[in-house]
Image (cartoon, rainbow, N blue to C red):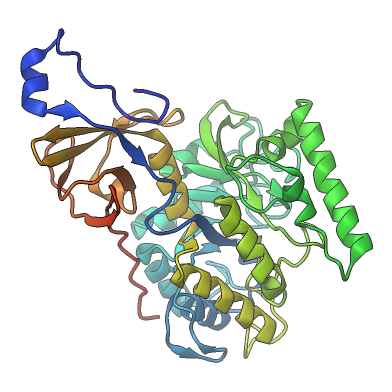
Length: 436
Protein backbone atom coordinates (compact mmCIF):
# COMPACT_ATOMS: atom_id res chain seq x y z
CA UNK A 1 0.00 0.00 0.00
CA UNK A 2 1.31 3.46 -0.84
CA UNK A 3 1.01 6.56 1.33
CA UNK A 4 -2.32 7.56 -0.21
CA UNK A 5 -3.98 4.33 0.86
CA UNK A 6 -3.98 2.81 -2.64
CA UNK A 7 -2.87 -0.76 -3.15
CA UNK A 8 0.19 -0.99 -5.38
CA UNK A 9 -0.26 -2.84 -8.69
CA UNK A 10 0.90 -6.43 -8.86
CA UNK A 11 4.24 -6.73 -10.66
CA UNK A 12 3.92 -8.45 -14.06
CA UNK A 13 7.24 -10.15 -13.35
CA UNK A 14 5.73 -11.80 -10.30
CA UNK A 15 2.29 -12.66 -11.68
CA UNK A 16 1.84 -11.76 -15.37
CA UNK A 17 -1.33 -13.84 -15.79
CA UNK A 18 -3.10 -12.08 -12.93
CA UNK A 19 -2.04 -8.65 -14.18
CA UNK A 20 -3.23 -9.34 -17.70
CA UNK A 21 -6.60 -10.48 -16.39
CA UNK A 22 -6.97 -7.59 -13.96
CA UNK A 23 -6.03 -4.87 -16.42
CA UNK A 24 -3.80 -1.86 -16.18
CA UNK A 25 -3.49 -0.07 -12.86
CA UNK A 26 -4.91 3.46 -12.90
CA UNK A 27 -4.65 6.21 -10.32
CA UNK A 28 -7.65 6.84 -8.08
CA UNK A 29 -7.92 9.28 -5.19
CA UNK A 30 -10.15 8.75 -2.16
CA UNK A 31 -11.74 12.10 -1.30
CA UNK A 32 -12.08 13.35 2.26
CA UNK A 33 -15.88 13.38 2.50
CA UNK A 34 -18.98 12.04 0.78
CA UNK A 35 -19.65 13.91 -2.45
CA UNK A 36 -20.16 16.88 -2.70
CA UNK A 37 -19.26 17.91 0.86
CA UNK A 38 -16.22 19.97 1.84
CA UNK A 39 -16.21 19.33 5.61
CA UNK A 40 -18.02 17.27 8.23
CA UNK A 41 -19.72 17.71 11.59
CA UNK A 42 -21.36 15.59 14.25
CA UNK A 43 -23.28 17.29 17.04
CA UNK A 44 -21.95 15.23 19.95
CA UNK A 45 -24.40 16.12 22.70
CA UNK A 46 -24.20 15.01 26.33
CA UNK A 47 -27.67 14.59 27.83
CA UNK A 48 -26.83 16.22 31.20
CA UNK A 49 -29.82 17.89 32.87
CA UNK A 50 -32.34 16.93 30.18
CA UNK A 51 -35.53 17.27 32.25
CA UNK A 52 -37.46 14.24 31.04
CA UNK A 53 -38.21 11.85 28.18
CA UNK A 54 -40.64 14.29 26.57
CA UNK A 55 -37.98 16.98 26.13
CA UNK A 56 -35.45 14.38 24.95
CA UNK A 57 -37.92 13.16 22.29
CA UNK A 58 -38.90 16.66 21.18
CA UNK A 59 -35.26 17.61 20.65
CA UNK A 60 -34.65 14.42 18.66
CA UNK A 61 -37.67 15.04 16.43
CA UNK A 62 -36.68 18.63 15.75
CA UNK A 63 -33.14 17.64 14.81
CA UNK A 64 -33.89 14.54 12.75
CA UNK A 65 -37.20 15.16 10.99
CA UNK A 66 -39.11 17.87 9.17
CA UNK A 67 -42.14 17.33 11.42
CA UNK A 68 -43.85 20.21 13.18
CA UNK A 69 -42.58 20.57 16.73
CA UNK A 70 -42.89 23.12 19.53
CA UNK A 71 -39.89 24.85 17.91
CA UNK A 72 -41.38 24.87 14.43
CA UNK A 73 -40.58 22.60 11.51
CA UNK A 74 -37.69 20.28 12.21
CA UNK A 75 -34.32 20.82 10.54
CA UNK A 76 -34.18 17.25 9.16
CA UNK A 77 -30.51 16.56 9.90
CA UNK A 78 -28.92 13.33 11.15
CA UNK A 79 -28.05 13.91 14.81
CA UNK A 80 -27.53 11.41 17.62
CA UNK A 81 -27.68 11.75 21.38
CA UNK A 82 -26.25 10.04 24.44
CA UNK A 83 -27.61 7.97 27.30
CA UNK A 84 -26.57 7.13 30.85
CA UNK A 85 -28.18 5.02 33.54
CA UNK A 86 -27.72 5.77 37.24
CA UNK A 87 -28.52 9.45 37.80
CA UNK A 88 -30.64 11.70 40.06
CA UNK A 89 -34.40 11.48 39.52
CA UNK A 90 -34.72 15.05 38.25
CA UNK A 91 -33.24 14.31 34.81
CA UNK A 92 -33.74 11.86 32.01
CA UNK A 93 -31.68 8.68 32.28
CA UNK A 94 -32.34 5.04 31.58
CA UNK A 95 -33.16 4.02 35.14
CA UNK A 96 -34.84 7.29 36.18
CA UNK A 97 -37.44 7.31 33.42
CA UNK A 98 -40.53 5.10 33.16
CA UNK A 99 -41.13 2.10 30.90
CA UNK A 100 -42.23 4.33 28.03
CA UNK A 101 -39.04 6.37 28.36
CA UNK A 102 -36.97 3.19 28.24
CA UNK A 103 -38.86 1.91 25.21
CA UNK A 104 -38.08 5.20 23.50
CA UNK A 105 -34.39 4.72 24.31
CA UNK A 106 -34.52 1.20 22.86
CA UNK A 107 -36.01 2.51 19.62
CA UNK A 108 -33.47 5.32 19.32
CA UNK A 109 -30.50 3.05 20.03
CA UNK A 110 -31.69 0.55 17.42
CA UNK A 111 -32.17 3.31 14.85
CA UNK A 112 -28.72 4.79 15.58
CA UNK A 113 -30.06 8.04 17.07
CA UNK A 114 -28.67 7.20 20.50
CA UNK A 115 -25.06 6.33 19.73
CA UNK A 116 -23.07 7.40 22.80
CA UNK A 117 -22.71 6.03 26.34
CA UNK A 118 -22.19 9.08 28.53
CA UNK A 119 -20.54 7.02 31.28
CA UNK A 120 -22.89 4.90 33.39
CA UNK A 121 -23.90 7.89 35.47
CA UNK A 122 -23.07 9.61 38.76
CA UNK A 123 -24.29 6.70 40.90
CA UNK A 124 -22.42 3.91 39.12
CA UNK A 125 -19.71 3.44 41.70
CA UNK A 126 -19.09 -0.32 41.62
CA UNK A 127 -18.40 -2.95 39.00
CA UNK A 128 -21.75 -4.60 39.75
CA UNK A 129 -23.50 -1.33 38.85
CA UNK A 130 -21.86 -1.47 35.43
CA UNK A 131 -22.72 -5.15 34.99
CA UNK A 132 -26.37 -4.32 35.61
CA UNK A 133 -26.30 -1.66 32.86
CA UNK A 134 -24.48 -3.85 30.33
CA UNK A 135 -26.76 -6.80 31.10
CA UNK A 136 -29.74 -4.57 30.35
CA UNK A 137 -28.26 -3.47 27.03
CA UNK A 138 -27.44 -7.04 26.06
CA UNK A 139 -30.87 -8.26 27.15
CA UNK A 140 -32.46 -6.00 24.54
CA UNK A 141 -29.66 -6.46 21.98
CA UNK A 142 -28.78 -2.77 22.05
CA UNK A 143 -25.40 -1.75 20.57
CA UNK A 144 -23.50 1.49 21.28
CA UNK A 145 -19.84 1.85 20.29
CA UNK A 146 -18.95 5.38 21.48
CA UNK A 147 -18.07 6.35 25.06
CA UNK A 148 -17.98 9.92 26.40
CA UNK A 149 -16.82 10.66 29.97
CA UNK A 150 -19.38 12.48 32.10
CA UNK A 151 -18.44 15.31 34.48
CA UNK A 152 -16.63 13.58 37.36
CA UNK A 153 -18.45 10.23 37.14
CA UNK A 154 -16.49 7.44 38.88
CA UNK A 155 -16.79 5.20 35.79
CA UNK A 156 -14.95 7.69 33.55
CA UNK A 157 -11.84 6.64 31.66
CA UNK A 158 -10.09 10.02 31.70
CA UNK A 159 -7.15 10.05 34.14
CA UNK A 160 -6.44 13.78 34.10
CA UNK A 161 -9.33 15.99 32.98
CA UNK A 162 -12.28 13.75 33.92
CA UNK A 163 -10.61 11.98 36.88
CA UNK A 164 -12.33 8.62 36.55
CA UNK A 165 -11.11 5.16 37.47
CA UNK A 166 -13.15 2.94 35.14
CA UNK A 167 -9.96 1.63 33.55
CA UNK A 168 -7.97 1.12 36.77
CA UNK A 169 -7.97 -2.59 37.61
CA UNK A 170 -7.70 -1.99 41.34
CA UNK A 171 -10.73 0.32 41.38
CA UNK A 172 -14.13 -0.80 42.72
CA UNK A 173 -15.71 0.55 39.53
CA UNK A 174 -13.24 -1.02 37.10
CA UNK A 175 -15.20 -1.97 33.98
CA UNK A 176 -13.03 -1.27 30.93
CA UNK A 177 -12.84 -4.98 30.14
CA UNK A 178 -16.63 -5.33 30.29
CA UNK A 179 -17.35 -2.17 28.34
CA UNK A 180 -14.90 -2.80 25.51
CA UNK A 181 -16.04 -6.42 25.33
CA UNK A 182 -19.62 -5.09 25.05
CA UNK A 183 -18.57 -3.16 21.94
CA UNK A 184 -17.28 0.33 22.75
CA UNK A 185 -14.56 1.32 20.26
CA UNK A 186 -14.29 5.12 20.46
CA UNK A 187 -13.61 7.03 23.70
CA UNK A 188 -13.64 10.72 24.68
CA UNK A 189 -11.66 11.53 27.82
CA UNK A 190 -12.32 15.24 28.29
CA UNK A 191 -10.31 16.92 25.54
CA UNK A 192 -12.15 19.81 23.85
CA UNK A 193 -10.43 22.28 21.55
CA UNK A 194 -11.51 25.73 20.44
CA UNK A 195 -9.99 25.31 16.99
CA UNK A 196 -12.49 25.12 14.12
CA UNK A 197 -11.84 22.08 11.94
CA UNK A 198 -9.78 19.10 13.04
CA UNK A 199 -7.48 17.04 10.77
CA UNK A 200 -6.14 20.30 9.38
CA UNK A 201 -2.85 22.11 10.16
CA UNK A 202 -3.10 24.74 12.90
CA UNK A 203 -2.40 28.20 11.52
CA UNK A 204 -2.51 31.70 12.94
CA UNK A 205 -6.00 32.00 11.50
CA UNK A 206 -7.06 28.88 13.41
CA UNK A 207 -6.63 30.93 16.58
CA UNK A 208 -7.72 34.37 15.38
CA UNK A 209 -11.05 32.83 14.33
CA UNK A 210 -11.86 32.87 18.05
CA UNK A 211 -11.63 36.66 18.24
CA UNK A 212 -14.90 38.54 18.55
CA UNK A 213 -14.80 42.27 17.84
CA UNK A 214 -17.75 42.92 20.15
CA UNK A 215 -15.99 41.13 23.03
CA UNK A 216 -12.27 41.77 22.54
CA UNK A 217 -11.08 41.09 26.10
CA UNK A 218 -12.80 37.75 26.69
CA UNK A 219 -12.20 36.45 23.16
CA UNK A 220 -8.51 37.43 23.29
CA UNK A 221 -8.19 35.56 26.58
CA UNK A 222 -9.86 32.53 24.99
CA UNK A 223 -7.49 32.66 22.04
CA UNK A 224 -4.48 32.94 24.35
CA UNK A 225 -5.60 29.90 26.38
CA UNK A 226 -5.93 27.82 23.22
CA UNK A 227 -2.47 28.93 22.09
CA UNK A 228 -0.99 27.85 25.43
CA UNK A 229 -2.61 24.38 25.16
CA UNK A 230 -1.20 23.95 21.68
CA UNK A 231 2.26 25.09 22.75
CA UNK A 232 2.26 22.71 25.72
CA UNK A 233 1.16 19.90 23.44
CA UNK A 234 4.01 20.60 21.04
CA UNK A 235 6.40 20.37 23.96
CA UNK A 236 5.14 16.85 24.62
CA UNK A 237 2.82 17.46 27.58
CA UNK A 238 0.53 14.36 27.54
CA UNK A 239 -2.59 16.28 28.55
CA UNK A 240 -2.34 18.63 25.59
CA UNK A 241 -0.83 16.53 22.78
CA UNK A 242 -4.15 16.10 20.99
CA UNK A 243 -4.62 19.87 20.92
CA UNK A 244 -1.30 20.34 19.16
CA UNK A 245 -1.86 17.51 16.68
CA UNK A 246 -5.42 18.74 15.95
CA UNK A 247 -6.35 15.21 14.87
CA UNK A 248 -9.92 14.20 15.60
CA UNK A 249 -8.86 10.58 16.24
CA UNK A 250 -5.75 8.89 17.55
CA UNK A 251 -4.88 5.37 18.68
CA UNK A 252 -4.56 5.37 22.46
CA UNK A 253 -4.39 3.01 25.41
CA UNK A 254 -6.43 2.84 28.60
CA UNK A 255 -4.64 2.45 31.91
CA UNK A 256 -5.37 -1.27 31.95
CA UNK A 257 -3.49 -1.62 28.64
CA UNK A 258 -6.47 -2.01 26.32
CA UNK A 259 -6.28 -0.17 22.98
CA UNK A 260 -8.92 2.36 21.97
CA UNK A 261 -9.59 5.09 19.47
CA UNK A 262 -9.58 8.37 21.40
CA UNK A 263 -11.32 11.37 19.88
CA UNK A 264 -11.19 15.12 20.28
CA UNK A 265 -14.28 17.32 20.48
CA UNK A 266 -14.51 20.97 19.55
CA UNK A 267 -16.39 24.00 20.81
CA UNK A 268 -15.12 26.99 18.81
CA UNK A 269 -16.83 29.66 20.88
CA UNK A 270 -15.26 33.02 21.71
CA UNK A 271 -16.09 32.66 25.41
CA UNK A 272 -14.12 29.41 25.64
CA UNK A 273 -14.64 25.71 25.00
CA UNK A 274 -16.51 25.28 28.29
CA UNK A 275 -19.06 27.98 27.46
CA UNK A 276 -21.98 28.15 25.05
CA UNK A 277 -22.38 24.38 25.40
CA UNK A 278 -26.15 24.27 26.06
CA UNK A 279 -29.39 24.07 24.14
CA UNK A 280 -30.00 27.73 24.99
CA UNK A 281 -26.67 28.84 23.54
CA UNK A 282 -25.85 26.44 20.69
CA UNK A 283 -27.12 28.95 18.13
CA UNK A 284 -24.37 31.40 19.12
CA UNK A 285 -21.76 28.69 18.52
CA UNK A 286 -23.29 27.69 15.17
CA UNK A 287 -22.77 31.15 13.73
CA UNK A 288 -22.44 31.69 10.01
CA UNK A 289 -18.84 32.71 10.54
CA UNK A 290 -18.04 29.47 12.39
CA UNK A 291 -19.74 27.31 9.75
CA UNK A 292 -18.03 29.17 6.92
CA UNK A 293 -14.67 28.67 8.63
CA UNK A 294 -15.32 24.95 9.03
CA UNK A 295 -16.21 24.63 5.35
CA UNK A 296 -13.21 26.69 4.31
CA UNK A 297 -10.73 24.63 6.32
CA UNK A 298 -12.14 21.35 5.01
CA UNK A 299 -11.91 19.93 8.52
CA UNK A 300 -14.00 17.80 10.87
CA UNK A 301 -15.92 19.04 13.91
CA UNK A 302 -17.33 16.84 16.68
CA UNK A 303 -19.27 19.59 18.40
CA UNK A 304 -19.21 19.52 22.21
CA UNK A 305 -22.58 20.54 23.63
CA UNK A 306 -25.45 19.67 26.00
CA UNK A 307 -28.65 20.18 24.01
CA UNK A 308 -30.86 19.11 26.92
CA UNK A 309 -29.72 22.01 29.12
CA UNK A 310 -32.65 24.31 28.36
CA UNK A 311 -34.59 27.08 30.08
CA UNK A 312 -38.03 26.18 28.72
CA UNK A 313 -39.02 22.51 28.72
CA UNK A 314 -42.11 23.38 26.69
CA UNK A 315 -40.00 24.80 23.85
CA UNK A 316 -36.45 23.47 24.32
CA UNK A 317 -34.65 25.61 21.73
CA UNK A 318 -35.00 29.38 21.74
CA UNK A 319 -35.08 31.47 18.55
CA UNK A 320 -31.31 31.88 18.44
CA UNK A 321 -30.69 28.15 18.76
CA UNK A 322 -33.29 27.33 16.13
CA UNK A 323 -31.67 29.86 13.80
CA UNK A 324 -28.22 28.33 14.34
CA UNK A 325 -29.46 24.81 13.63
CA UNK A 326 -31.24 26.07 10.50
CA UNK A 327 -27.96 27.62 9.39
CA UNK A 328 -26.29 24.23 9.79
CA UNK A 329 -29.06 22.56 7.79
CA UNK A 330 -28.59 25.14 5.05
CA UNK A 331 -24.85 24.46 4.95
CA UNK A 332 -25.56 20.77 4.50
CA UNK A 333 -28.13 21.43 1.79
CA UNK A 334 -25.60 23.56 -0.10
CA UNK A 335 -22.98 20.79 0.00
CA UNK A 336 -20.65 22.57 2.42
CA UNK A 337 -20.97 20.62 5.69
CA UNK A 338 -21.79 16.91 5.90
CA UNK A 339 -23.77 16.24 9.09
CA UNK A 340 -24.21 12.81 10.67
CA UNK A 341 -24.09 11.12 14.07
CA UNK A 342 -20.94 10.81 16.16
CA UNK A 343 -20.71 7.03 15.73
CA UNK A 344 -21.25 7.13 11.97
CA UNK A 345 -18.73 9.92 11.44
CA UNK A 346 -16.05 8.20 13.53
CA UNK A 347 -16.58 4.94 11.64
CA UNK A 348 -16.44 6.76 8.33
CA UNK A 349 -13.13 8.40 9.27
CA UNK A 350 -11.46 5.20 10.42
CA UNK A 351 -12.59 3.40 7.25
CA UNK A 352 -11.54 6.27 4.99
CA UNK A 353 -8.10 6.54 6.54
CA UNK A 354 -7.44 2.80 6.61
CA UNK A 355 -8.98 1.56 3.36
CA UNK A 356 -6.83 -0.22 0.79
CA UNK A 357 -8.21 -0.05 -2.74
CA UNK A 358 -7.17 -0.78 -6.28
CA UNK A 359 -8.36 0.58 -9.64
CA UNK A 360 -7.76 -1.27 -12.95
CA UNK A 361 -8.71 -0.40 -16.51
CA UNK A 362 -9.84 -2.96 -19.06
CA UNK A 363 -10.56 -1.25 -22.36
CA UNK A 364 -13.22 1.39 -21.72
CA UNK A 365 -14.12 0.09 -18.25
CA UNK A 366 -12.58 0.56 -14.82
CA UNK A 367 -12.86 -1.90 -11.93
CA UNK A 368 -12.50 -0.36 -8.49
CA UNK A 369 -11.90 -2.94 -5.75
CA UNK A 370 -12.24 -2.03 -2.09
CA UNK A 371 -10.04 -4.36 -0.06
CA UNK A 372 -9.14 -4.46 3.60
CA UNK A 373 -9.25 -1.76 6.26
CA UNK A 374 -6.03 -1.22 8.16
CA UNK A 375 -6.98 -0.46 11.77
CA UNK A 376 -4.05 0.07 14.17
CA UNK A 377 -6.36 -0.32 17.17
CA UNK A 378 -8.63 -3.24 16.37
CA UNK A 379 -6.71 -5.00 13.62
CA UNK A 380 -7.11 -5.31 9.88
CA UNK A 381 -10.34 -6.65 8.41
CA UNK A 382 -12.04 -6.90 5.03
CA UNK A 383 -14.26 -3.97 4.12
CA UNK A 384 -17.98 -4.72 4.12
CA UNK A 385 -20.80 -2.89 2.37
CA UNK A 386 -21.78 -0.91 5.47
CA UNK A 387 -18.20 0.36 5.83
CA UNK A 388 -18.21 1.89 2.38
CA UNK A 389 -21.19 4.26 2.58
CA UNK A 390 -20.26 7.74 1.43
CA UNK A 391 -16.80 6.88 0.13
CA UNK A 392 -16.04 8.94 -2.97
CA UNK A 393 -13.20 8.36 -5.41
CA UNK A 394 -11.85 10.61 -8.15
CA UNK A 395 -10.09 9.37 -11.28
CA UNK A 396 -9.65 10.16 -14.95
CA UNK A 397 -12.94 10.36 -16.78
CA UNK A 398 -14.57 6.99 -17.32
CA UNK A 399 -18.11 6.19 -18.41
CA UNK A 400 -18.23 2.61 -17.15
CA UNK A 401 -17.07 1.77 -13.62
CA UNK A 402 -17.59 -1.36 -11.55
CA UNK A 403 -17.19 -0.99 -7.78
CA UNK A 404 -16.87 -4.16 -5.73
CA UNK A 405 -15.57 -5.57 -2.48
CA UNK A 406 -12.64 -7.98 -2.46
CA UNK A 407 -15.10 -10.88 -2.19
CA UNK A 408 -16.71 -9.84 -5.49
CA UNK A 409 -19.87 -8.22 -4.08
CA UNK A 410 -20.82 -5.34 -6.35
CA UNK A 411 -21.68 -2.00 -4.72
CA UNK A 412 -24.20 0.55 -5.95
CA UNK A 413 -22.59 3.85 -6.85
CA UNK A 414 -23.20 7.19 -8.54
CA UNK A 415 -21.00 8.84 -11.17
CA UNK A 416 -20.36 12.58 -11.39
CA UNK A 417 -18.42 13.88 -14.38
CA UNK A 418 -16.49 17.14 -14.30
CA UNK A 419 -14.52 17.76 -17.49
CA UNK A 420 -11.85 15.09 -17.75
CA UNK A 421 -12.45 13.83 -14.19
CA UNK A 422 -15.01 11.41 -12.78
CA UNK A 423 -16.11 11.04 -9.17
CA UNK A 424 -17.48 7.69 -8.04
CA UNK A 425 -19.59 7.91 -4.89
CA UNK A 426 -21.14 5.10 -2.88
CA UNK A 427 -24.49 6.40 -1.60
CA UNK A 428 -24.87 7.36 2.04
CA UNK A 429 -27.93 5.62 3.48
CA UNK A 430 -29.58 7.90 5.98
CA UNK A 431 -30.82 6.57 9.31
CA UNK A 432 -34.55 5.99 9.59
CA UNK A 433 -36.02 7.94 12.51
CA UNK A 434 -38.37 5.80 14.61
CA UNK A 435 -41.92 6.58 15.67
CA UNK A 436 -41.41 7.76 19.24
